[in-house]
Image 1 (tube, rainbow, N blue to C red):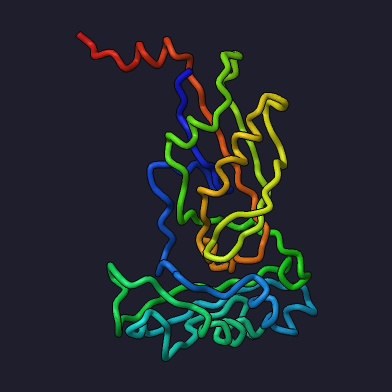
Image 2: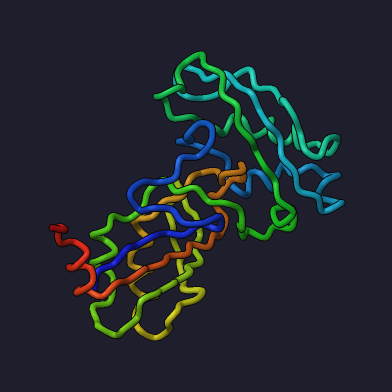
Amino acid sequence: MGARLFVITAAGALSLASAAAAAGPVWSEAPTYADAAAVYPAKARAEHVGGSAVMSCTVTLNGHLSDCASIAASPPGMGFDDAAHRLMPKLRAEMGGGVRSGSEVRFTIAFTPEMADAKPALENDITWAALPAISDFQASFPKSENGVNHVRVVMDCSVGSGGTLSGCGVESEEPAGQGYGAGALALAPKIRVGLLTADGVPTVGARVRVPIRYELTPQAQADASAKPKS
C-alpha cells in the first residue's frame, strides 16, 4: 500500500512536511499549566470564567522579556491582565527572524476554566514544534494488505519539559485490533508540541489529545498515479 499521512489538530489537517507556525514568537521557555493555574484570578476562579490577556513586551539580548504591559484583557475587569503579567518572567523567546534584542513582541496568554478546576486537559488548538518524518510513519505502520483505506488513532499524552510527550495511551483506534494504535504510540517520542497553544494556554504539565490519520491507497493505484503521462 501507498500512504498519505497526516497529523490532525482540532482545527483540521496539518501536513507532516512542516510543523505549524504559531502566531507571535516561538518560545524556548514558557510557564507551565500549573504556573498559570497558580496565578488564576480569584474572581474568575470563583465565577468559573476563562479569559486571556494580550501582552506587549520588549525582547532582551538573551530572549527574556522586559517592559511588559497588557494591551487588552478579556473579559475585562476579571484580573487576567495581572495574572498574565505575573507569568512574564517565565517566558523566553527564540531569537531570529523578526525577534531580536530590543524588538517589541505581542502575544496572548490564556486561562481556561479547566485550569481553575485543576483539570490538566487541553482541548485548545495545539501547535506542533516537531513531527515525525514520513519514513517514521512508514516504519511504524502495520505491514498488511487488509483492505483498510482510512485509519484514525487518537492518543492521550502528558506534555513534559520542552513540549515532549510522555505517558501516552490510545484513546481510540479505528479500525481497532489491527496494530494501528501501537504504531501511533511508537511515534510519540518524535512529536513535540509548542509550549503555548495557538490561543496562548501553557501546555507543559497538561494532557493533550494527538489525533493521527492515515489515508491509504492501494499500491497498484499509487504506482499508476506516479507514471508519467504520455
